[in-house]
Image (cartoon, rainbow, N blue to C red; front, side, top):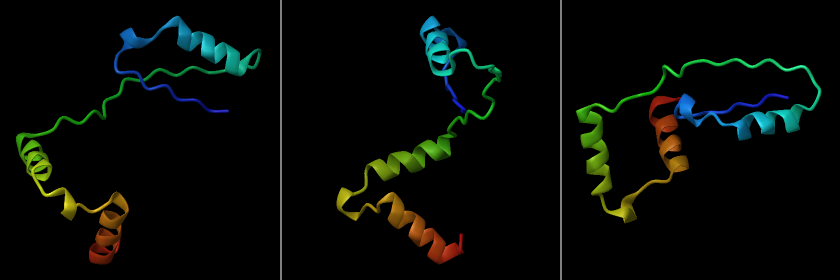
Length: 78
């Protein structure tokens, strides 16, 4: 079994998480790996501007996520 916990901060680590691991794995051998999340993305001013523009669009013209992906596949062959 494989379980991943994503925490916003090391301060969020509680004994409840450790208790949940103990319950899930009981007496089985486990390995705990802790790594710093370095993939956090900070939005640039340009990215924020695009998102703000999108928020102002008429909702009746929105595409669903599936429709968006289909359009990208059609246009770029992804």
